[in-house]
Image (cartoon, rainbow, N blue to C red; front, side):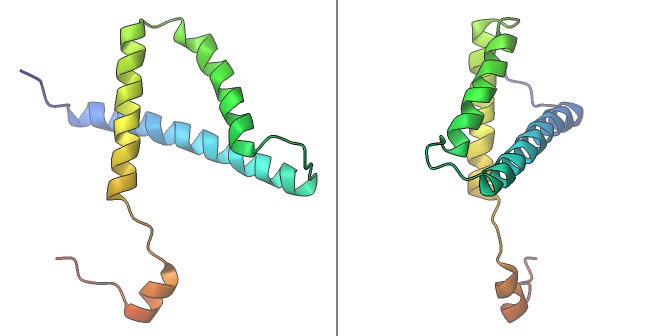
Length: 105
């Protein structure tokens, strides 16, 4: 029987997820600023460059883990990312100003 994750485990996983997202967000922002200041029509797209950089870091770190653990982490991260995409929504502030905030209770 599968155990339910404890609140502490959920907090730790969420904190690690948020830390990764924050790091990637900062890097993407700086790459965009640099790209805008120094346009190069021959440059690779920012997501491609960032992916290549991160793949290098990941390759250096994955050797410390069993392949099954890496597959599990990949599945967990993928499912979490999909759930975030499905369950969290951006609300346009202009619509809130126009229509107000609905009562969700």
